[in-house]
Image (cartoon, rainbow, N blue to C red; front, side):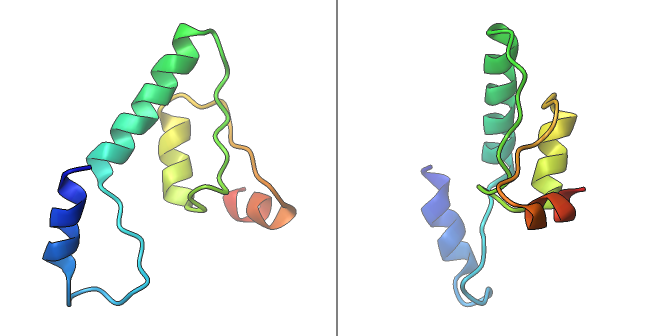
Length: 81
């Protein structure tokens, strides 16, 4: 994560906090790695949305091969449905 401090410095004073900061290429690389691991081990991938609580990220995970998502409560299910 060597770029993370650089990204934070570039945003200092321009973003109200707290605010999520996502390095999209790192996130995509992690999604791809999980997909590859699941495929190599003949597993179905159902990422838990409690980690990110973001519909767009959930959509990227499903587009990358996840067979669905896992939610912790009915409110999360409602949002992601």
